[in-house]
Image (cartoon, rainbow, N blue to C red; front, side, top):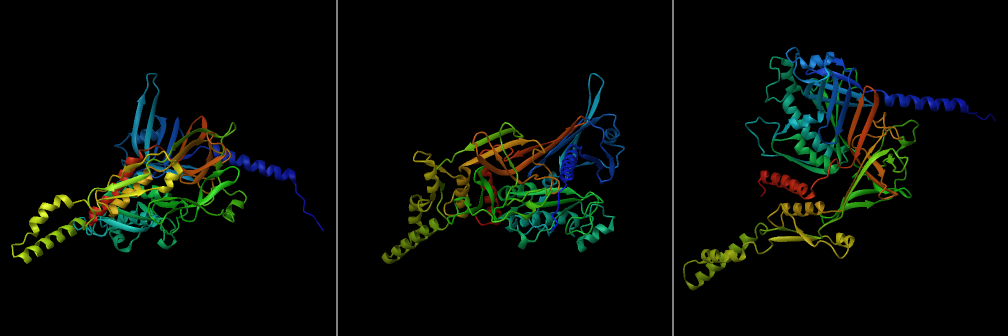
Length: 549
């Protein structure tokens, strides 16, 4: 029998060649292109002093490039009269990522030594969502907006995409709206045919039946898309992605043609809320596999441990695979003297109040029922003794005594939280935002108050690229914006925290290789009471607009 032999020298050379090619790719500077307002290429920015571009999860990141003032692209940008369009765009390609945005400001600086620089600041294309309004009814003209509010219920990802799509359709090809170029007759026909090949923004399609994201309610009345959808992005842990289509790129799935420079918006579910994912663990027993769920009372929530997955994604076993599956995060950064974690911050908040109270006015129908009973009894008594009806007068006298006395307040005590806190704890708090007990708004107020005072922690780190994990989109890196990764802290040795990547910055200059800066967890601390109040107000506003209360 012939036994296959291994040429170890050849295998070693192949490994070293692969590592060298990977290293050369990582240190290669990004490909920066400048475009005009109609997405006509004006040049490749090959001469510059420094550059830095940030992409944030569910918010607008900023980009900046500093070039010599006498560089031809600097002169072109400064020549507003000579440009055919006032808008200026940029694309930055690196490791499968395409950062794109629109110029916000430019600055010319002349120093005392005679040197000069030209700085251009850009806003990431997420900014587009802040300049599209969600109409109450995108299918009708502005003069007729019925019903009074846009309301959609279903899987969060599908709801967000549908809300964005119908309002882009309203702007791009609505039969009620004048096209941007009235003399371009093809723009009139798209209102009937639904042709998206000439749209400036398109939405990647998603079927509701294939969407496994948590259910959500989207409501709006002439608010911008960012304001409407960002709470759902946060709650369902959805990550909006933006990529400019450039001629020569493969067409995104679901499209047969796109114009050069069209912005393709997708909303990606990396949460693992429904199928299960990891929320933490330790270095000895591995990551805890769990799902998030609400208890039957509708108030308590948390993570419930379930058996570890029997099998890991098959792609993890493929040689050379780069990427991460949200159900089983593959990236864990470990702290220590030889760690590539350059900085970290840990914020812990223990739970607060055990009991939550809300209300102030009786639930609908209580005061009215008592009033009707008093008036009826007074009138019946008056009729039996033969005097004029006195029900109304009696009710007027007794009203201050019974109004808002019965079923005017409601409470909820979190017994599970009490067991965790110990016998010495904060007793109770009043849940703001609902003034009438036993209503939808009061349940929301209690739920939000419980959420705002829960046990919570945030772990933020900054890491270096390629040590050992590589930053980039699937196929080019192990993880990117919105992906779940694990981290360890010197504060709690052995414990693994799992959270989403919330911000990524790439920065470089003409003398240094590109560096990725990654932030894991919340980008900035927030006041939980203020956040809770904002959520309550948003929901109550929708209920009020519908005329339910």
